[in-house]
Amino acid sequence: MNYKSLQEAISKGISYLLKFQQEDGHFEGELSANTFPTCAYTIVQMALGRNLDEDIINWFIANQNRNGYWSLDPSGKPDKEATSFAKLILKEIEKNHEYSIDIMDKVRASISKIHDEPLDLWIVKLMYARCGYIPWDDLMPPAYISIGMRIMERLKPFIPRWVLSRLKPPNNFAPPVRLFYSKVFQDLFIAEKHTLVALFLIIEIHTNRREKIINDLANWLLANRCSDGSWFRVGLITAISVLALIDLKNAGYVIHGLDSTIEEGDRWLQKLRTHDGGCREAINLNVWDTTLSVLNLDNTSKVEKATRWLLDNQNQDGGWAFSGLPGGKLPSDADDTALAALALLKSGLSSEHEAVKKSFQWLKSHQSSDGGWGTYRPGSGDVSCISITSHAIEACLAMGGMENEINKALAWIKKSIFVSGYWRDLWLARNTYSTALAIVSLIKSGNNDCEEIKRGVKWLEATQNPDGGWGEDMDGNIISSTIEQTAWSSYALLLDNSKSPSAWRGIEYILKHQNSDGSWPASCVGIYWEVIGGYIDPVYSSVFPLTALKYAITLL
View (tube, rainbow, N blue to C red):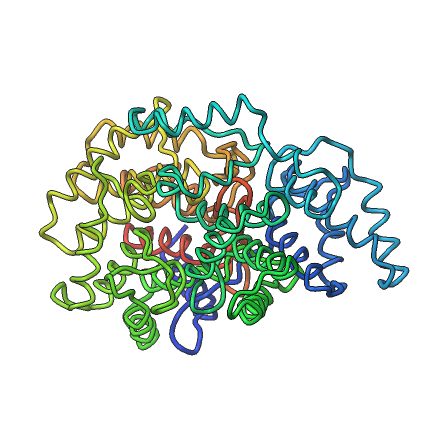
């Protein structure tokens, strides 16, 4: 390995990365299609009385494996719930006699390969009940579970947070609709709230039809819609919200603007379609894509344009959401805010710039009492996250004058290490990402010789694959090497030891796997939540190797 080979790889990688920059300056990759949002989209289209286009039907056929299963995501890992949902879609298609003979033959052949298994996940069971395959009572919990849930609701204020984080309600029964009125609902993670309200509305319309509850749920949905017609700019949440409103309309309820709300939501859902015919879970992650790109580019007119876009898309509260939608009811989150603030400083803006000051005021006010940062607001169904906290530390270091916040965050990171020597993350796969970022934040803050770094480095070295790369799935199991995980692991190890053999083997892996156009193969490393799985973002497979290579070249 020599300086010239690294320089050439970096130059080609930057040229490829710039292809993701849009006309207004932001960077944006196309996220991969996933089974749940694709199924939910098709349910909406059917509820609107439309035939599906052949591209989306062929997506279902193409993504079934030889054993009859679908994966939640592009990882290919068979998943029973994804398969149950896809089976429902195919059974509904089979009822329609307006498709071509060729399509119907493919659908029947696909259904014949699916194994009959009991329905478990209540969200999928709800869709089966709505389509008439099972009774609605199958969703409802037995009396003893309902009583237990009522008791837990009352005891919740007295139960330690660490115990609550380990208590999970049964996922094979729907939570009671009365949960909407409880303190438990108020403390849920924001995405869970959006999901539950729409599902509660569907249940209530098809079962008890209590007027007040239906009106309250419908009003909540309408009040919490984004300005672009979506809910939370997320595919599954928007699809089930539109579906709930369609059911509301079909049940005879008259609400001002209901038709236009359904139409706007449907138009937004059309934007989720991917080149392979399926649907992605989020419209984009363009704030993250933009900040990561800026951090890997020299200060040129391209960076200036991206910086202006970031400034234009800062929320009034000083933070940034995951997707640019100024004034669009999309809440700021700590990860995008920390990285955007860091990108603004890197681009040359002063720490006295108003946008920069507001961003750090937001970060200060959203640091958790335990010292870490969660995605949204501490205490609102949120937990501190290693990667977000590490990014916040790096931003605070760049800002200066935030030693108190940094020290609290470092203390939390140190005590969050697992016995085996790794840290676990919420948002990217899974242990390599958080372990690498924890090491980076500890080193950059001057804790170079702490015991936690030594343990983290040892764990990374022990999990390296024989080919020099790193790879794991969203559950933390070691798999074939990916560019993204190899990049962030190599970077962390080089920061710890510029002569690390493991790190340089990782750099060699990155160089070896670069394509002629400057790209690297993208892998499923992004994580949403358990019912969605992960995603591919092609920007990740450019920015992360560039970070590692650009640091490696400084060491030669």
